[in-house]
Length: 228
Length: 266
Figure (tube, rainbow over the protein chains, first blue to last red):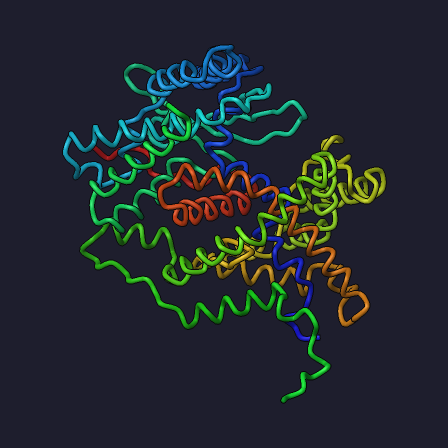
């Protein structure tokens, strides 16, 4: 037999290996994981892990009590999630990271527009999955310093059947308290993935306005799908 | 009319190894991405970060893959989901993981991860025995958590850079290093390959192993990938980034990734 006939199976195993793939995919589906699982609260550690851990735990607890497990219409869930997202996340900070120099080169109106559209993208992609929430809980595992004045809080999302995956929260201390700058699911950073995604769109369309136009269209599509 | 030589291997045209080889050949003939000028620092940085000099070819193969996915892979997975209940699919996943254990064990050792090698060995014994040939992941319940290793990761631990990104239709994202890693695992580290090598009558074992693994992997991947597609603008770029980040995490065995500059210089 020729060498190329050998054992087809293993050729796939690295890029596509079972549980590895499950994790890859769980995390690739950042948005899939977030509503159902990330926001779920749980026995988050109050045991002296510090303010940052409490902040993440509160976020999860509010998410589950007020949104995921609440018996309210989906439009109300969406609204509550938007308020929480704006409150807990550092949207301008995310914009600066995701768009790097493009963000600084943009006019204040463009920056404002981007921040607004990004908020919509997150709200409409995450909220599509709220109905899939099935009792998952979030457990804070540890925290560690990150960057100049930041903290990464490491947590695990545990499902009812005992399946779990890791979610890390990159926080920065702002004058008004902690803000989330990034969510890392199974090793994949949402901010880094968006940076590559949006960076490619900017270079393809040749302008910041090109990116905004595509985001606008995406938001319209998502809204239509949800009848929002 | 020419007679087809009898010796020709029956499945060779469809062999994933052959496809991989074709992929490399295609890349060598490919159209390449244009490197941005040094004056455009942001674009140059992005170009280096993506490390995707074959981007035009990769994007073409990515489109081909989307078509094949629609007409071949998706119907298979939908049938699989219809025919096998979730519990059964989880059993298949466990079984396939267990078959893969020797490869993980050897790569644990090659990386000098002796404690993890011990966990891998313990899982294999427990899951094969108590877990009914691996269908039940008893090891996980007994505190031996699953992890996968492959020769691509081993090379990374040895300091080999991942090299350019490649996209292989039907298989998915990879890099030159990881692609070579598959080859090494297929030929050298997998006992099923040793056992069935050169034996025509054992060919079905290879294909059964391949088929189970493929269906299991695609089943797990389908929904989250659909989700990534919906949440991104340029799905190709989002997947490329996610794949590289995921591999980095696997190589570091879940340790925190190197610090990204998240602090605004302004």
